[in-house]
Image (tube, rainbow, N blue to C red; front, side, top):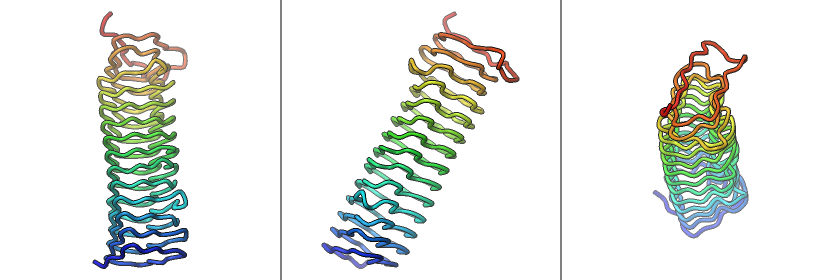
Amino acid sequence: METIKHKEFEGERPLYASHDLHIDHVTIHVGESSLKESRNIKATNCTFEGKYTLWCVHGFEVDHCLFTPTARSSTWYSSDMIMTNTKQLAPKMFRDSWNLKLDNVDMPDAQETFWNCHHIDIHNSRIANADYLFMHSHNIRISDYHQDGNYSFQYARNVEIHHAIINSKDSFWNAENVTVYDSEINGEYMAWHSKNVTFVRCHLTGTQPLCYAENLKLIDCTLGDDADLAFEYSSVEATIKGRVVSIKNPTTGHIIADEIGEIILDQNQRAPKDCVIETRNK
């Protein structure tokens, strides 16, 4: 593998179509497509300032690097990436890419990131300003994770999350085959129109959560004091610890909680209208 150290590049395509290349302590200044169409690339201790840096790159490792705010849209149409100990300050970083592994990555401006990607593994990472994260992506595994940003995981499929804090209005809309373990999910209108979503030992907050959901499951979860009007038009199996503020018009299933503030079953119920709702301490 060829090695380039302590160099600076700028302009358009300075390292275009490189193969079997290790760049170390290299700065890519503002420009475009510096490593586009490359293969088997390793970057360590580098700074990327230009946009479209890693387009159509297959097989690359990034460690202890910095992507500045001008490095937007840097990783599109690429695959087989391992990124560790890196800070990304630019939005729209991953699109139409696959086999992505991130460990100890900080992304403070991650809006519109991870669109149409698949086979994503994220560990020990923090993502913020992340509106519309993971749109139409699938086969996602996440652990030890913190996220701030709305409308995340819309239309996502085959998602597994462990030990996360996710602050996101309208999270998991139209999502399918999602399981979340030992996590905290905060935000209004959670998981509407979803299918096969399961929360295990999670704390869920935000008004009108878990509505219009099909085959929804809550296992030993808790709901926040603002999680009112829950489960409207959902098929649900739920065991809830503590109090539920209010439940409105679930369609079918079984909900059991320690305490339920209000049960609303009105003229707008939908068939089969046979959900069993009960408290443990009657």
